[in-house]
Amino acid sequence: LARVTGSGALAGRTLVVSAGGTREPIDPVRFLGNRSSGAMGVAIAEAARDAGAAVTLVGANLDVPAPRGVETVVVETTAQLRERMLERADADIVVMAAAVADYRVDDVSDAKRTKESWGERPTLTLALNPDILAELAHRERSTLVVGFAAETEADDDALVQRGRDKLARKGADLLVVNRVGHAEGFGHVDTRVRVLDGSGVVADASGSKASVARAIIDAVAERIAARPA
Ligand code: CTP
Ligand code: CA
Image (cartoon, rainbow, N blue to C red; front, side, top):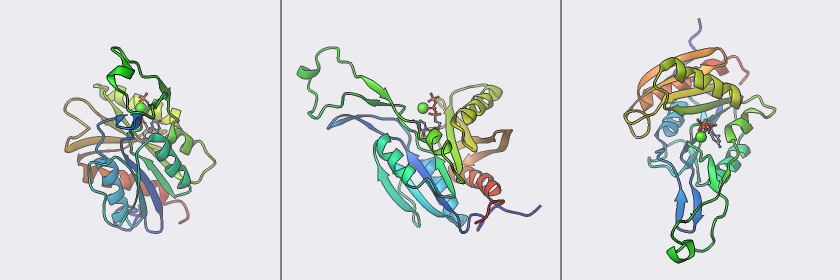
């Protein structure tokens, strides 16, 4: 079997990866957000760069520095992230590693809210955000589309089953599933992921974010090797 992975496996390919967590404004000084640091998406960008791809990182509120040798585009909200991803949707590979806010604030205030204007028991009305991954996957495309899923399922089979359901629902080619909880995932150094396609688990990797990212890029490179550059 030819070795398709490692250095040069993505030479001549373009890859766009989203990273970080989107923020949704409440008023000019406040937002709804999540704890994603962007480390996983940045590690994917570095692994893809090292495999020879021309990489664009679309970063939402990154807590980690953007890598060298990668074009970086800065976004804050889900609407901005969607716009930047759709503009680049003709890349050979798109990876949605960002934690996208499922909801945005429907009634964003132009003026800073005060206790006086908000009262004693304020409510925020939320609206469902568009699903960027599903949108990228469900278009007419030759692009390889990769999603992520952070799940809290404790049981391994249940975790994989949730991943398979999500992969099918989103229409992506690959889905990277990792377990999050109090001791795993967000903000922690060691990670374990399973990479799924429609037939099941195609890769299972654990270790540092950098080594897990290399394993994910290996799985991507194997997929794309058959396609003309
Ligand atoms: N995603 C996206 N747009 C959204 C929500 C999620 O593109 N509005 C992407 C994420 O970047 C990730 C994948 O979809 O690659 C799975 O995200 P996840 O939050 O697990 O999926 P949801 O469909 O939002 O499901 P849940 O209700 O479990 O949060
Ligand atoms: Ca979600």
